[in-house]
Structures are given as structure tokens and as C-alpha cells.
Length: 394
Image (cartoon, rainbow, N blue to C red):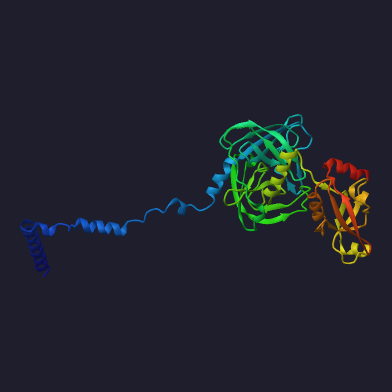
């Protein structure tokens, strides 16, 4: 039986080989791979080809264009000052960008590392006062590698703004935005030279507006942002999504000196007003009436018998100041300056500062149960050190 099966298999193989030989001899094209017409191949290729890459404007998302527009206008600043016992300016919990770097050996000059922004093609720069305060030599480096020395045109410690001047050709001035139109949630970029590692861009949003009573400056109206601001960013640019300047980076809230996502910038509107005054007059002239206010609490209002009136309590009046000459006394509740209603010490400070020195203004106060009006000759706000001496004398 097995022999018979083997014989059948051998015969089948022989027949198959014979058939293959005949076909390969007489009809060889039957054994070739089928060839598709070239038109069919091209059509198939078109059907399976990958789609072309989209334009770069579609592929890239982010704010490269805004950064490109603003980066050339932001400079790095190195300020040298005489040796000091203090190792930089920092008030817990606020650190002001460590303008003069880490603690250095006594007797050695201190180096302040910060940033600045070119706001005009003729070489006017904005930075923070604390970056250049007390500096004897200021060096500026542009993003294109050029270096030059800068001179101080003027400073305003009460807003922490300084105006510098450099002389170089073809300076790239940044476009100025409108901080008044900023809204919480708007995207912003912080540009500076953090930790002296080189020009750096960080992104975030506007976290809050109108931040004040932080104890950083006398006049506070900060933009708060979570864009990382670190030591060395002080004086740098806060720009909007179009690359326009909306603020000057000033301070961070930090226990360690690094960014915790709470940074503060001076609105460009404030910086522009200060710069204009400095460039025109060499200093900022603000109004002054010579009072020291405090919040009017319900308990104080009851004790002073002024009812539910809204205003601020006059805690003291400086000798020979406009308020003293007009007859305002400690214990009065000041409710209005000119046309501006006053409900807080910050409002009083801002309203009086906006007055022109040597102008006249009507001030309303509540003294006990009686409303009173005084006409004041507005004075010129003295420098902080003079006000401090006057306060100590009183």
C-alpha cells in the first residue's frame, strides 16, 4: 500500500514538472509578474502620497513674532557702585531682583545686574531706579552685541523709574502699548537678563491689575503677572502679544529670591508720564499738602462722631505745610480733594500728587458732626528724605 502511494506521488510531481517546462517554453509570459500601466501607477501614487506640509504660520503657535519685535529693544545693564555694608536691596517678602547681586566681600565694588528698554531711537532708556541707584558707572549691552556707557538723565525713586541715555546709531525703539486696556487673563511676555545668563523671554498672563499697598514704592499701581521674573529682570520689558511695551518689570514676591509666579511691573502709562517729566524738567513735580493719613475704621468713625461719612483720618499735619496753613487739624476726616472723593490713603496720595504745585484746591473735611471746606495752596512734594526729617521733627 505504501509503495503504491509513493508511486502516485512521484508520477504527480513528474507531470507537474513536465507541464511547467512546456509552459515556460511555449508561453513564458504566463509566468511573469503582472505589470501595471504607468498611468495606473501614477494615479495610485497620487492617492497614497502624504499631504504637503502646511505653511509655517499654521505650524507655529506661540508668540515668536511678539518676541522678535521686542527683543532688540531690551538691553542688559551692569551698574557699578561703591562698596557698601548692605548686600543688595531686599525687603522680606519682596525681593527687588537683587540689583547688586549676591553678597560680595567688603571693600570690593558692587555690580548691579539688571535690564532696560530703549523707548526712542535717539537713545532714551527706561529701567528701575534701584538698578542704577548710587551707581558711578553704567554699562549697557544691546541684543546685537554692541556695548556702550549710559548716563542718568533723571530718576524717580517714588515710582522706581530711572531714565538713561546712550549714544549709538540705529537704535531699535520698542513700540509703546496701552496698559489701561490690559485685562486679567491677557498674555504677556517678560524680557530681561535673569541671573546674567543672557537675554531671556518668559510668558504668562496678567494675573491682576492695580496692585497697591505692597510697601514697594510710594506710588503703586502694579500689573501682577505669573510670567517668570527673576533677579536681573528688573527694569526689563513686559510686552503684550503684539510685542508692545505695557510695563517695566520691577519686583517679585519670593522667600528664596527665585520666581514663584508672582511678579509686578510698573504700567507703561506711569513710566511714560515719569519719563516725560524727567526729560522736560529733570524731575517729577507732584502736589503736596503735608498730611499723614490713615484708614477710617468704623470704630474710629464712632469715636470721632462723624457718622457714616467716607474718607480718611488725618493722623498728623506737618508744620508749615499747606494743610497746616489752611487750618486742617489732626482728627479731621478728609472726604474730598477738588472733584475727587477720597475713601482711602492711597486715593488721597494719588489725588494730591496729581495736583500742580502752586495751584489752588478746595479740600472738604468732616470735623465731628460738622462739614468744613478749606482752600489750599498746593505745595511741591519734597524728596523722601526731607519728608522723613519733617516727620521726625513733628
